Image (cartoon, rainbow, N blue to C red):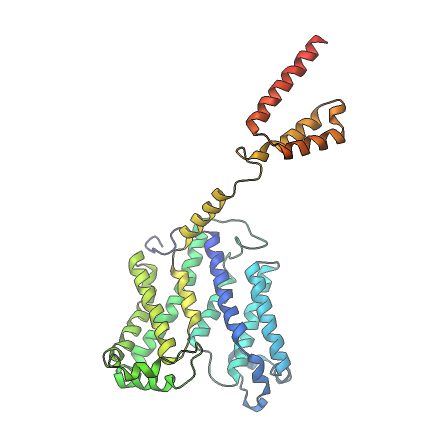
Length: 362
């Protein structure tokens, strides 16, 4: 554990940011996904996979209706917002969110396709959050703070899970597809087929790249280099900061290239890579800057610092000056012409000396 160089200064806020990032990634997916349109397809096209086989047929018949799918999407969005806010009951809300996501992915992939590694790693990380103290900071109902090692171990567990998913993808490609999959013509065929599809970002760059001379030099390197970076992804936990950042830039560039050339947007993976960045020092600097730029309303060096002490002193004095009208007048005089705490202290001394003199004379 001591050799791991990742998140050396992790805190409760670090883990809370991870919770928020994961839920924001889900929100970006849920808000853009018109899952209700699948309800207009014939029910015979739907097939149960995985945990969806445990659901009764009568329930599935109601679930794949357009209205039910809209409600399912709205519930998932609402639960994601509640997890971000950290409202009680926190663990129950997170468990419900995880269960709804399983049903959501099962329904959407039941009409075709499969739950890919992009969705699975995000789902696994969401399930892992249930066992971590992610609500100890940046939540409406925060838990008790724990030892810093707990938060660092939690961040390492999250990053390790993400890195292992890259490792498995790279090993599967290298072992099951070698050496055919690394043939440049295979990659060129993938680029041709994928570039014919509409790009979600509205950018048609794949066809232009294939027609350019640079493709003859870059295509043979794409799969070998990408596979090597995926296999090396777990090393990000032990690499020094500069090498880890270089590896993250390489993985991020791989996803960006897939989006531009093959019209497959891995926005989830790009955002999850941000969790490998040690952002705790930035959070601490931002917190210190906010504290220094906004002093407390009754600090010693602020003009209104003596208002409350003057009201207390007025309330403790005896005689007509202690009447509510006099106290209210004193408050508004202080607001109109506030004094510093130092002047107020001197005023307190002078008043006490005068009062003691009067007592002695009496």
